[in-house]
Length: 269
Image 1 (tube, rainbow, N blue to C red):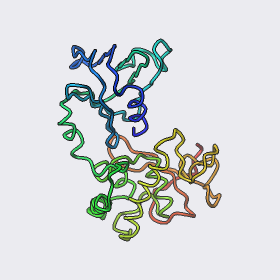
Image 2: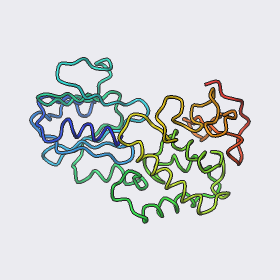
Image 3: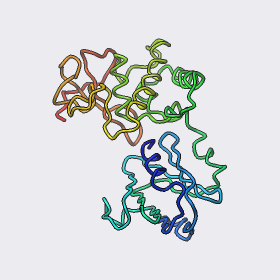
Image 4: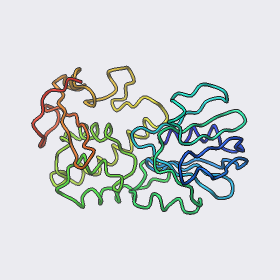
């Protein structure tokens, strides 16, 4: 989302809209043509596009959302019926596909959409105070699994399943390890690792946690069911973690990570 916000900023900011379509029942009659895009910002996984007149469009990509930026007249990446927002300037077109939580609001009220979130890990104004806030939120529930705490956007905003999995590996703990079994130093390290890895990958498509970009060498255990652990070469196992309607797929190395884990078989993918 961070990278998407900056791409939209570069393409649209400072330019008046010559085309604007909001394909949402409650927004379809809103007229944005001739308004100027004043800026774009991300907060965690939330995106705000600001227009002249102190108006902002809020959206969330979730798992299937995508913004495509193309020159006017070029072919779209996805079918037109999947487009939810179309914003065009004289030379560029930004198309948002499968966007979620679309709403228009006064720019001054953007904070209301994200007031339940923890500190944004990509906030350029991040301080030790933000780190301590996230640490306290994690420690507040000693029985909670570390993977669930890292993924909770109310604890800190921006971590996805890939980073949660890889941070657990770097801590040497399985994703199912209760917070109460971690030291305060380990909890702080988990927050610092999340921020470090997100910043390392913020400006590129490739998401590497090992520091290497060569295909097959980007991650320690995530998606490495076939190749094995990038550190020790041992088998990588996977199993579901989390609860609710959308449990996640966790990868872990039984050799390099200690702690509880469900009965899992070597991954085939």
